[in-house]
Amino acid sequence: MRDDTYWDKSAETLSRNGIEKLQTGLLTSSLERAAKSKFYAERFKDIGFDAESVSGLADLGLIPFTEKKDLRLSYPYGLLCEPKDRLLRMHISSGTTGQAVAVFYTKADLELWADLVARCMYMAGARPEDTFQNLSGYGLFTGGLGFQYGAERLGMLTIPAGPGNSRRQVQMMRDFSTNVIHIIPSFLLRLMDVMKEMGVDPKKELSLRLAFVGAEPYSEEVRRRLEDFYGVKVYNSYGLSEMNGPGVAFECPYQTGMHIWEDAYIAEIIDPNTLKPVPDGQYGELVMTTLKREAMPILRYRTRDLTRILPGECGCGRVHKRIDRIRGRTDDMFIIKGVNIFPIQVEQVLMSVPEVGNNYQIVLTRENNVDDMIVRVEVTDRVFVEDMRVLERIRKKITYEMKNELLVTPKVDLVEPNSLPGTEGKALRLIDQRAV
Ligand code: AMP
Ligand code: ZN
Image (tube, rainbow, N blue to C red):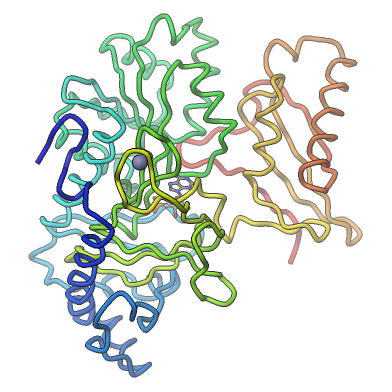
């Protein structure tokens, strides 16, 4: 049921009570389905877990966690719950290390996924009369096809541009008056430089209105930069292949966190050390359970993403829980001189300095048992041609701000615009050269 505000009014306006009732019913059937897979059948047997002992959400804690390594070890078909003739598609999660994780979809899974992505975009204000350019990788990565089918479901004219080809992207945006885009933050930052080189002022020459940005962490400072330069509203989009891909959590126009669609997923936040749930408002690891997936239900999946549930109600009226911007992944955190740091904290400092350009890298080194953090950062064109004294002043300013914020003094290396490597996929921000 669609109206001006809601893509799926009955799902989006569920009450808390309604959500819990729905989740209870769906959880039971998801458990039954999961038990048909080789992986869960064995896991349940090993730990003596009886799926029938779960009669409601209060029993959620009885269900064992599923970890990335479980999915890796079960590659390729260990978690499958449906015969192969019912499958339509697979994707692979973009992890850079170790054995890949394959995810499978039935027809109903693909339909539900497209519907959730359409719901997200509609919530943020995309409408059938819009033109949508998807600058995300097509293929195994879920950001391409996931948004493609979501946008088609919504009814937008959809340009499956894919990543890269920066100049051509800008040309297409101009030729087809693209007003809605989906893109990863590092690529949208890079396009700023490309547009500057091309002499294109997006506010004057392009029609961009909405940018759905996600798939990798980025800070509020980056959001502000992007909004100022492009004259768009940036909406944060969160998803992961294990939970379909995009369409898991998304910002509404109030932009106070991302609503997780609780009619399709159960979200919990746990302390990654004690594995116990933490109260709303407290940071921890996001744990997710699929409620409707047929081909590959996943129970209490430890995402490794650190966030928190924002307490209180959203002004938009949707009661689906909201998660805060992802702070990073547990495996992205590094320790230097005894201090725990996430790359996003470095980004926050850098991006609040106007002379800093759009690309940076953090390199960790170890010499004579002493660890160092080197921050390589591009400066803007305007600054680079200035004299050494200006550069030195900027370097000192960044070093000082970093020390203030992070309590660690990095070595700051200012480099020319566009000199750091760019990637078509998710950016590689951290290079740890410390031998272990
Ligand atoms: P993949 O399954 O390869 O698409 O990767 C999913 C992962 O990308 C998530 O587990 C997060 O670590 C990261 N990710 C996705 N969306 C966001 C976002 N909006 N902010 C921060 N990280 C994100
Ligand atoms: Zn809201």
